[in-house]
Amino acid sequence: MQNPDKKVFVKTYGCQMNVYDSERMRDVLTPLGYAETTSPEDADLVILNTCHIREKAAEKVYSELGKLRVMKRGRAADGKEMLIAVAGCVAQAEGEEIVRRAPAVDLVFGPQTYHRLPQLLARSKSGERRVVETEFPAEDKFEGLEARSVPSRGVAAFLTVQEGCDKFCTFCVVPYTRGAEFSRPVAQIMTEARKLAAQGVRELTLLGQNVNAFHGAGADGETISLAGLVAELSRVEGIERLRYMTSHPRDMSDDLIAAHAENAKLMPYLHLPVQSGSDAILKAMNRGHTAEDYLRLVARIRAARPDIALSGDFIVGFPGETDADFRATLDLVREVKYAGAYSFKYSPRPGTPAAEHDAQVSEAEKSARLTELQSLIHAQQTAFNAAQVGRRLPVLVEKPGRESGQMVGRSPYLQAVHIQADPGLIGQIVDTHITGVGTNSLSGHYAHAA
Ligand code: 5AD
Ligand code: SF4
Image 1 (cartoon, rainbow, N blue to C red):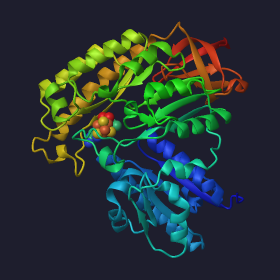
Image 2 (cartoon, helix red, strand yellow):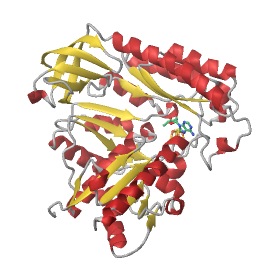
Image 3 (spheres, protein in one colour):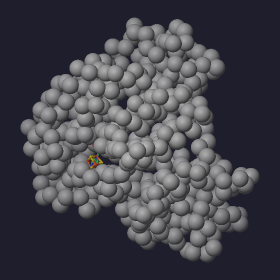
Image 4 (cartoon, helix red, strand yellow):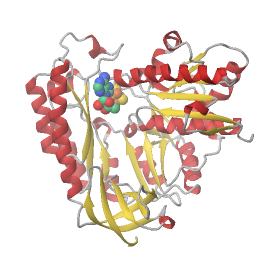
């Protein structure tokens, strides 16, 4: 390994899968002599790991590139280099278009090619003006990454186990940017999990665009479901907690629901997007389930694990959404009672079927619906958090908080919990008496190590 003599600045947009990919890019760059910096002005290499899910997310990248162009000029005036790379889903979707719109960009590579970063950088350094690589290579990215060390990731880490999606919801770019559904082989995941555990990781969140569709090859060629994978991972020494996201209602299998009843390491939190409460809209979205199917599923999950915290994603203003359709979404939310949820205005994405629809909903209508939905969700989240006050919860202590003597950890329900505790407790699960609730977090007193 080279001594770090260069600096890299990585900015991550979008979902947790991108957070994971950014970590792995850092892993690839460390042996090349890159240390991380938090200020782009100092960076020899800037990577924007981008998101294409909504127009706003994609546009942010271009405004950032405008700022970087100025910094790059400033560094060049001082005789210093700044390579600018666009990675992730905007890179995948727009490819060459990026260098046309933003000529300061040196490298463009998609989510499936970043394991080739050493070669891509070498090509750029040897004079290739613009390196654009957005294919879906035949070789397995994860195999290419496997040999690399996994530097410390703290106490809670993401682990991508599945990528891509075959569901083709009519609003969504993921099947185009991340490609077809793919599950990593179980042995490869176990190796990575053991490495993480050895570095002090106690909680793993298994990631995938359609994580509960996971069907990885097992050691004897058999196919392992997500429930099977969770069972194997829960036997890894040091791993105390497991989570997974994002799940599709259609792939919520019986064995996975049963795991929530049986496996104490599987945390009672489930991100299960429904997108809409209207059957007509669900059909137009190609979701493959009705509102009633979803409610029945929620009831089965709650029968297995009554205290489970449910979260979801919603889109308002999908083409053709009437006021009655939107009311059906509000009704569904009222019935489910979420612990929290994300909601978005529909954003037409080029190349997706819904973008071609002529019954687009007006921006004003979308904004009004979003405000109404968000205030309902916010009230539910507040109620869910307030209901924890007075309870004792096991909290995994993650890191120091902002105030002195304060630590921040997570409850089983993924809530941030602020406690007065010693930094020596980082990595431990402590029994915590919950005494207060803030907007997005709980506070409590540490009782004793659980
Ligand atoms: N417009 C708005 N929201 C979208 N999502 C996906 N595509 C779009 C789009 N075109 C939302 C969905 C998904 C979440 C990750 O982003 O709710 O579950
Ligand atoms: Fe997109 Fe639908 Fe696949 Fe989720 S299930 S990634 S929303 S196409």
